[in-house]
Image 1 (cartoon, rainbow, N blue to C red):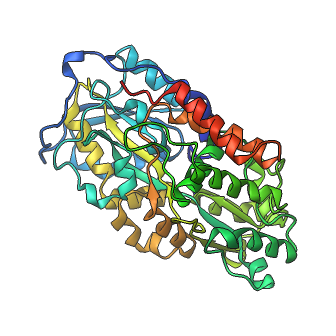
Image 2 (tube, rainbow, N blue to C red):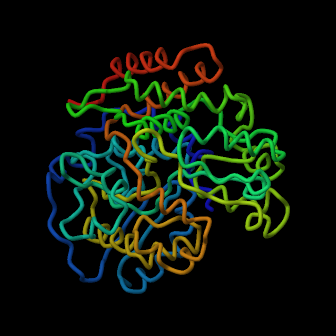
Length: 432
């Protein structure tokens, strides 16, 4: 799986750059060029001119190779890529947009792009450019504000349960289907020889906050009410925080280890026996174990256990948008359309293991014949988009901080939920 801007590299991106957002509305090379509401269709004639593309290092590293068919079909267009380190990406993009020096096309992250979804910043996706029904719904929804789509999904990921199948077989247990089965499952893995049943990332930051938001959905809660206000001080959020804390208070997980970078070595050595994580980690396990084929004989995946309401997870990945003041919007949208084609997304998987945002691309044998990816596909069909409000990253970070105290037994789940609600009310939703 890819070394993408996820929990490791994205920890810096989201935790540093994304939180430090500022008002971009009205910024750009020319306010009168900002698209509003809808956009004219893009034709099928060859693209021409120059297109400047900015993207974060990681999945985009292979784009020059992946778009060779586009270049062959459009010989009169020049695509210029600028790859920026993840930790700096959004900060530099925001600054460039504010200075009127942004690219034509920019990469975004569906889980953290809300602050850009505005007609003064991005052009609406042209009518008929792509079939929105071809994508995982939550990924498409992540780019929609007031019924206007601003981004097109590119690659996808979500969380599933990754566990030591050899230890589960030894213990005679199957992957948990519900919350109440989860800690006993981890404890059974410990009984089969693991140091801890779960290797839980303990950055106590935005990513832990995202995890608990996911559990709140599973409990039947919502993060934002129907009238657009924060809805965090609820029984469902308290249940989610308790569920997360139960991993630690039961002893199935350790509040101090492993760190993110230790996750794979701990897992392969047996110091831990399960991870709630994205698909990228699977591809690193053979290397961590020091043996080719180790993963095939030692690892299984499963969808997340269900709470009272569902087994919902969050959708994340990469997406593309065209800047409102692009000098070559026609060629830019033609490039985005190419990147959204199933064959292109399969090529991206072959080149970098980026999982497709287009559902039909998962039918290609190169992906379909990977049994450990089945759980991630199942989970992608049960994903939801994070709130499309510009302060979500700040609120998720605060939530991550609060749940540390609960996991360590120094604060109640109810108090943590109340504290997060108070903080969220203080920063608002960024809505006008």
